[in-house]
Amino acid sequence: MEDLDNNLKVKRSTDQVRSRWNKSLDPTINRIRGDWTEDEDDKIIAGVKSGDDYKQIAESLTGRTAIDVKKRWVRVLDPTLVIGDWTKEEDDLIIAGVAKYGPKYSYIADTFLPGRTDAHVRSRWLFHLNYKVNDVYQKKGPYSEEEIALIIAGVAKYGEQDYIKIAAEIEGRSNNSVRSKWKSMCKADPNLLTRIKDMNK
Image 1 (cartoon, rainbow, N blue to C red):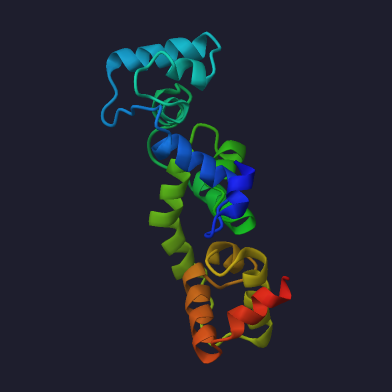
Image 2 (tube, one colour; image 1 turned 135 degrees about the vertical axis):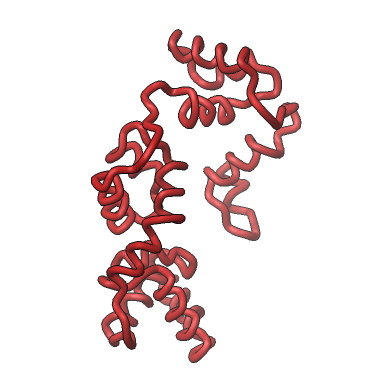
């Protein structure tokens, strides 16, 4: 898998290649897409209680993969899941987590928000908190030379698409603001990205 990853024209991580294979390309999987049955849910619950891993449970479910089973358990069936309104404390933890770690929603959920899933945290951030933070804390006005240098350093470190992580290192600037500034920098200097990539060689 790693050798294949190294030879791909479009660079993908080993985890991305493995996920793509397991989810869509493996010809041995006759996948079922659609609603889960009560019988399937019962088998997953019984399997988890017996200490079986997700792969073992999936083998008893026609057309379901270990990834399917894990998602079903973690996002729906796990009795420790917290369902309902978000508290201010939870919101503050998500804001602080994204600011420090970037969009590592699974890590933030597992570390700081027991009972909330990565999907819950991602949705809460993207569709509620991200805009709230931008409106309240976003710095206005032109970027300073120091901020521009931080954008360049962030692109060199994280790549040009990971604006959340880059913005997390620039106090008062949102990921949307950083993205717009980066686009304008590239428009003014079309060779900027090439020079940054050359710096990393």
